[in-house]
Image (tube, rainbow, N blue to C red; front, side, top):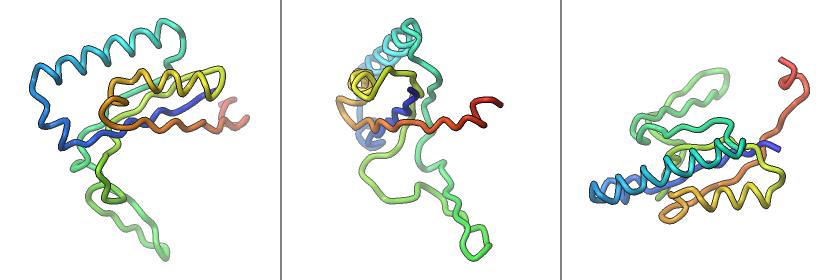
Length: 121
């Protein structure tokens, strides 16, 4: 089963980290990513640019409305994701708990809907 692991961090907290701590966290991410790739669990993953670069799109009464920034004000921002293949939710949660940002932020685990038509092309 496929899961999306959404990584939420406080950009303000991350910006205050000293360079050595930032380097350590990126090293931990590198190790984690290598491990899940070696185990065949990694499907995709990327870090996102800061929330200030985001644009939210809504369509209301047939008109497109865009807003700079995220869709809601929160203390934590979506900073990246991993798409993984796990046997079940328990395994997905175990993998999510190993993401370095779980120590300072939160990881949302979401099952992915795979429709037959989409799967075939």
